[in-house]
Image (cartoon, rainbow, N blue to C red; front, top):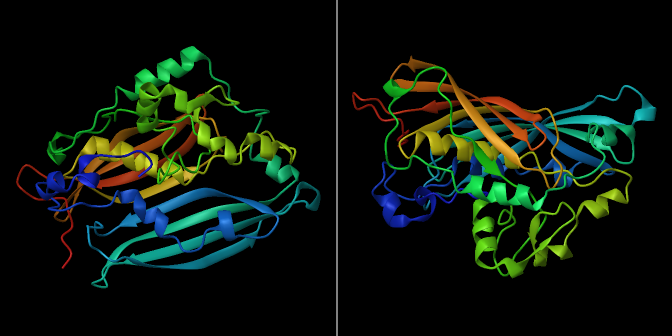
Amino acid sequence: MLGDMRPLFVDADYAAASPWKTLIAPPSVLSCYEQIDPEVESLPGCQAVLKSASLEWRLPIRMGDIVTPESVVTLVNELSQSAGEGRTVAVEVATEAQNQDSQVVGRTRMNYLCVERGTAAQRALFGSRLDAHMYSKADIDALGEEYKQERARGSEPLYWEDVAAGQELQPVLKGPTTRPKYLGRMIPNWYWGQRQGWEKYDEVPELFFSNENNAPEPIASTDWGHHRAQRYGGIPGALDSNSERIHYLSHLVMNWMGDHGFMSQMDLQFSTQNMVGDITRSYGRVRETRRDGERAVATLDVWQENQLGERVTTGTVQALLPTRSGAPAIPQGK
């Protein structure tokens, strides 16, 4: 999801030999089952941004599963302090997803901030920024090289006994983000701004142009909305989607724990908005390890920074790991 193309998700033969015995969906897919999306279906005349997210995983989503989600609006609360600054409304959406055996796959709780367009409240989402970020050719070359340094653990188990507080995770790079919907037929919108896009840029550079950030972008994307459209509304540009950061952090944790681990909980706060054209680096550090009955748990502090060095996301992740005594981390279900 969003550039995480590890064999466990896409290679049926590889997955059959894994602890899962079949292809599984990326864990962050759970966030996509939300049936009410305030960023699209919210209050008229507002711009909605995701401010925090809590995800709980109970079971993996395996090839052939039928997942049925149900979403409920659990909170609508006006936060406006002054009519002159524009109205601000908090909206919370809770979702539960079950598989074909009526087992709970996972739950999410998403908190959105809906701000009145054309007001100081909307402008405040951009902080002190006046324009989108611009990259030099050297910047772009350096990012391309950084993508090539990414490493994923894969089939080698990470045992709970080998994890200690203070251990750092290798950062994962994403971006610069752009707004293409498709590049050719059936290419989803994560394509550029992820490693696969950089590989295509190396292979066929004529498919790309330098956009208003001076970042390479697929030619096809010129047909879709951009910073320029948002600027007509008196704001610096287009905001990126905070929900994508859930996928980025899932990628980070999967790279660290490999095929034998299982994420059980993720709690995130999105303190700062990224603009389209920004990059996001995901970081993690082990806070503690503990036993919870038969489960061997590692708690991680995770965070994300943009190219300005701003910490845009903070949070925690709980990961279940196998043990050297043979205890698996993977929930079995029925």
